[in-house]
Image 1 (cartoon, rainbow, N blue to C red):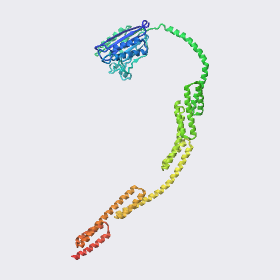
Image 2 (cartoon, one colour; image 1 turned 45 degrees about the vertical axis):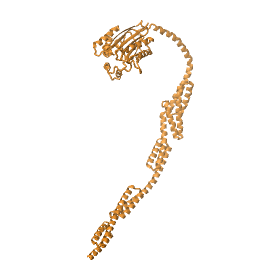
Image 3 (cartoon, helix red, strand yellow; image 1 turned 120 degrees about the vertical axis):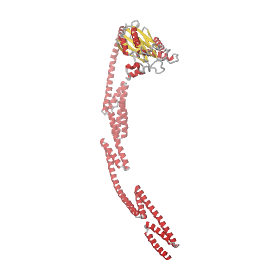
Image 4 (tube, rainbow, N blue to C red; image 1 turned 90 degrees about the vertical axis):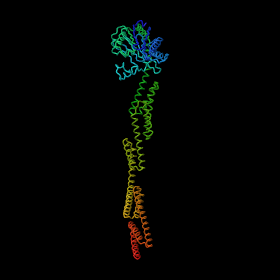
Length: 585
């Protein structure tokens, strides 16, 4: 009856263009209550491909089995078309774009996979236009490609939804659109929109009469007049809705609905009257419960947790009577928060700061379940408790530093503890810090006195070591290396007692120099003694010249060693030698 009482006219054209074979396909079926229009565009680039024909046949067949324009019917048609290509016996993988229109002669919806386009024109204006499922369309939506450049963009046929996909086949299904008499729906493949821009198509629609063939011929003439060099296959179909179906039973159905609804409304009115009394009593309890809930929140915000606990317990009892699970849960969360805060307060007053801190932290965690109610107060209490603990920790740390004789750092910790205690009015902590400071200052005074005594002793040692070193240097300069050795040894001993490694090493170096000089003197003395022996031997042999020569060498050595007694002794021996030499002549 719908088809007979509406006027839907269809015309189309489909040509191969310069391709060897037309792989587009258009088909439709118009039943009494529903109609289905299907257009497919083969995109498998095979001259003998049958993708479009198989897809159209499968979609029309699926629709004919259960005519409808429901969303699941559209999805079934699209799935059937996709399955037909996947299951086709072909040496090549079949692929195609598809666009399906379903209508009940009053409304329509469309489903799409690919870049076949649909346009709805009403009163000379475009009211609806489909969107391609391609990379180019995405770039247009992202404003990276201008809309008028789509027809020549290199990614216009790079599709993310098309027939022939084994996985991730997600076609688009539109909502329902109402049709009006005079509407025109056009379906066309890429052969049309790649060569005719949207403005020219709009002009063609405006010039159309009530016959779809005229619009189809005008569009085809416009396409061929362009004489595009690479014109391939193309398909254009026009559906003219000259008259939509009007339901004659609409008013009667409304009247029947009213006649059925009135008795039902009367019964509901009676039931409502019966339930009003019970509802009012229940409503009073609900109001009291909500008032108790509100009071609980306000008391928590006012930091009056004792009164908040009372109102919370009263509201909880009403929530149980009303079997209001949500409110029971909310009030339960508030009660746990309040109890945690009160317990923490008891521990804080008992000066059990560690336990109080744990309970305030638990209350802070509970606050998250009641929209962080009371969190500012809890954080203040946590900060206060932390300050109490900090005062004790600083005093303890100061005691440790004082025991390690780090008085400056200990004083810093005590002063910090005193300042924090004063800031939070913690009298006991402030008193402890002041007592610790007084003891520290007494210890510092005693230590300073001991240090002064130690400093004086150290200065005396330094002076003694410096004197020994100076005397050693003087003896060394005079060539008295034995005396220098004694002085340097004494200086080293003093510096070792002072644990002055630098001065000690300097004394050792000077001591080594003195010992080296002594060693050199011993060597020269031995050399002089050897010359003396040679001289005496030569004298005994009456070789007076050699004897005198050896005496002179030995004398020079003793003179360099500043051994005056030995020099005088050799002078006398040389005089005796001269006498012997004179007698010998």
